Length: 223
Length: 244
Image (tube, rainbow over the protein chains, first blue to last red):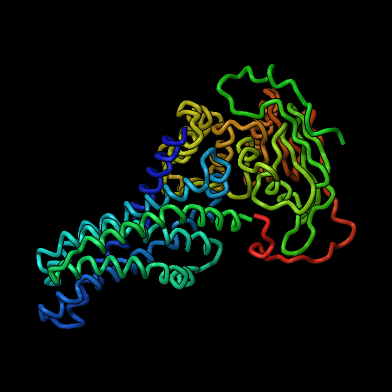
């Protein structure tokens, strides 16, 4: 019975995120802007840009995700929706999973789609673009899932965005390392598959534990 | 206090068809206590609420009316005592207990960016009760005229009515209402009383914190008094308490 219930929740979250000021579009715009600014800062030598491109795209993606995370549960906490969701015949863990999925579909997925264009702009060799895109597709769900834990812990904190960043950024380190390494390996004509596999493994691990951790924190914050 | 189990009669009341569990079960609360911020707010509270009954929860501000309702909704941890709804214990199986509860608190859980109808439709979808029910609830609260408008344009009273309409959509036997008539006009306040009457007439139960007279025949009263003595302060840190 919970599949239509969860799709109702997913559809609502996606609609709210796509509204003006909902966060999704703003995060993607921030991502594009941050990457576009890099050549202005470090110069336009193709070799330099190509070498740092993967790292720049990944770090911009982390920051863009962080920007949209603080409202993940906070809006629902403030207007009482979270209380009603706790009484709904759906496990709170599933609610967290649905909200993280909606967050990824409105931030991580569009960022993955525009990443090849940004890679080209940063002089990334065309051969490395598939690895870059695959790494983002496999790795950005972990950013939404781990971010959900941080957002749940800070849900009752006013202006908790900064605290959230400090909590969540260290958790992003493994995904950043392996995600960026996949594209770098492709640039260096090395095998990108081990790094891609580890990126996917981190996402699976986050999917397994983040809903429980976030739901636990939300229950405590409901008091 | 009578035993928490044994309040039968559920078979006859389940005639509504397609209803969830718990209709015909009584709520039995014994020796309930709750700490807020290291202070004992409620202690030794016992009462019984049979199906077909409603209780008005009275008492001065700060005596713990909202705390009691939020405690029974499973949002706050119990410090002592038991709360049973039929065979289901709040402490032992919070999820099953919560599936019998409809809660309307100070917050209306209304999304300003969605239309009035969509706001209610989400809960009908989550609870699997169908769109027809949501439409009927809108009509009952006189909201169908603004059903297509964004909820951001609602007045405070309309938003409150939209929040209360959820009670009719989600179909739970035990209603916990915290000041449901705040910001409602007299006609709407009367409507709330009527709906509570209809709810208990079909075998539900309601616990309503209110400062006004609802004018509901047969409404019992549960008056909360402040605790006689201050309990010793305990840790207010939920992470250290380790109860959840």
